[in-house]
Every structure is written in C-alpha cells, then in structure tokens.
Image 1 (cartoon, rainbow, N blue to C red):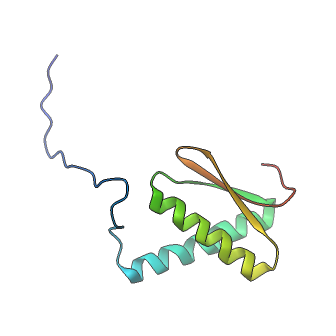
Image 2 (cartoon, helix red, strand yellow):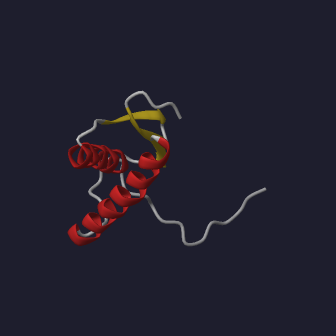
Length: 93
C-alpha cells in the first residue's frame, strides 16, 4: 500500500544549532534546574529524555549547576540513546 505524506519537513542534523533563542534556552535550563532539582532532592535521582546532543549538553549543565548549588555532587549518565539519569552519589533509581 502506498501512502502520500503531506506537510513532511526535514529535521535538522543532530549537531545543528538549537532553535531556541538565548532567552528561551536560559528559561528552559532554569525550569530543568528547578523541576529536576526538586525530584532529585525528594528521591535522590531523576530521569529525563535526551534525544539530541543539545539535550544531553543541557542536562549535563543542569547537573553541574545543581552540584554548585548544593555543594554535593550530582552525577549523570546516559541510560540509553534517548534518556539521561541525574543522581546523587549512592542513590539507585
């Protein structure tokens, strides 16, 4: 069976520049800092989607910012190609 595709758009390359403005990027990182920070504070870890290299860079920056804010190291690891885990040392999740 053949299907016609309408309104199909090409996705940017994996290493393309983020489509967010500087202000939008800052607000998004602030939201991640707040939301993931609360989740990590409550349960010791948090998972979040990371589909692109830019997503992964954001999450690493948030982990580093939380480390500086709390004075306790927030570690990060890629669980698979689409998900990152941020956690406090010694926490399992």
